[in-house]
Amino acid sequence: MSELPGDLLYTSEHEWLRREEDGSVTIGITDHAQTALGDLVYVELPEVGQDLDVGGEMAVVESVKAASDVYAPLAGSVVAVNEELTDDPEKINADPYGDGWIVRLQPSGDDGETMDPDAYQAFLDELDE
Amino acid sequence: MGLKTPLYSKHVEAGARIVDFGGWDMPLHYGSQIEEHHAVRTHAGAFDVSHMTVVDLQGEKATEFLRHLLANDVAKLKVQGKALYTAMLNHDGGVIDDLIVYFLEPTRFRLVVNSSTREKDVAWITEQAGAHLVDVTERPELAMIAVQGPKARELASVAIPSESREAALALKPFFGLETGDLFVARTGYTGEDGWEIVIPAADAESMWQAFLDAGIAPCGLGARDTLRLEAGMNLYGTDMDESSSPLESGLGWTIAWEPDDRDFIGREATARVRENKERQKFAGLLLEDRGVLRNHQRVVVDGIGDGEITSGGFSPTMQRSIALARLPAGNYLEAAVEVRGKLLAVSVVRPPFVRNGKTCIDL
Image (cartoon, rainbow over all chains, first blue to last red):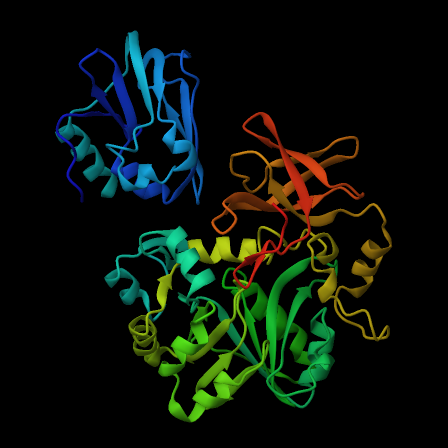
């Protein structure tokens, strides 16, 4: 089991969130998620400027195995997308918490439910049982 | 907990991701499905296919029986060791299974059938065999390993007992060789050169390890699926089943209509489909846009009608998405596929997409 970065928040949909100094929030999928999906071959990104509600469809990640929706973990406006994933979706496999980030949102109010690293680890442990 | 092949502990030891496949605990991949795919296209890969079912047939009337049981004609097998790919149809012309039959001796044949269809296959074959006095023997005590790729035979030959090695290396494509308990055939399911090897379960671990030691990459079912899709080879249960005619599943080339008095099971029903000019066709699709084609997506042919993807996925060799699809009759080279509410442009092409490491479709 890999270490979970301690400075991130997590969701039950296996996404991670990092609060940036400018108030925006960077979002990606966790190591658990990329392992379960297998090699990624395609990522569909939202438009910069698009407004999303909590739970709204934010991106689609497709692996050799399946397509999986990535839902907005909080309400916000898209301020940046990781364009490099268009040509190199496997960056999500190689570095899910770094180069494999997917979207950056400027929060607009509603926060979804998140977990700290310990709570997410406990959540993963329960899934394994 | 599912069924386990004799190589299960080797897969776990190698860190494989294990998934359920028709009741069997099988390796999906050992780290990266795409790297395993490329290993087979450029070098060599080994697959545990021990879940597949080996059925041996013996009897004076074995040939006569198989000419009735199978849609392709075993009378084409004139030389010992020769293999034939065929569908096994029911009386309604639906595909019970696809299989390879090997001609071992004039009164003895070996069938390799799918694992997901094992029970119904064995029951069907046994039922049909009764009248022909042919012995039907399932061989669950045997393991099966496929080594595939341009370097596969050369690298794998070190693990073949020395008394059989030279003859194994001399096998022509689609021929098999039986030496005691060992059976080596120059067949496969990837579009690359290679062998499929049947050995007693007790010998499987040491042979598998010898392959890995020779530099052959262990490959899982994930890569097996993308390789066969690129090779334009059907998968039973998705591209064909009992509800579809072989003529609407890209298997027309495997139906032996001549001689016209050969009475094979499903002949009448299939002949009726053959007369129907509106029958669906089976073709390849190449996605022009970014994205990934998936099983069951709707294909829209402008002004003609709808079809359906039977197998879709991403081709690591072409770096594009490809599919096999059942499509409305007609001549057309373009269509669209509905992916999450959007229509994406596809070219209609003739498989295979990739053979012997090279792309066969204009991109």
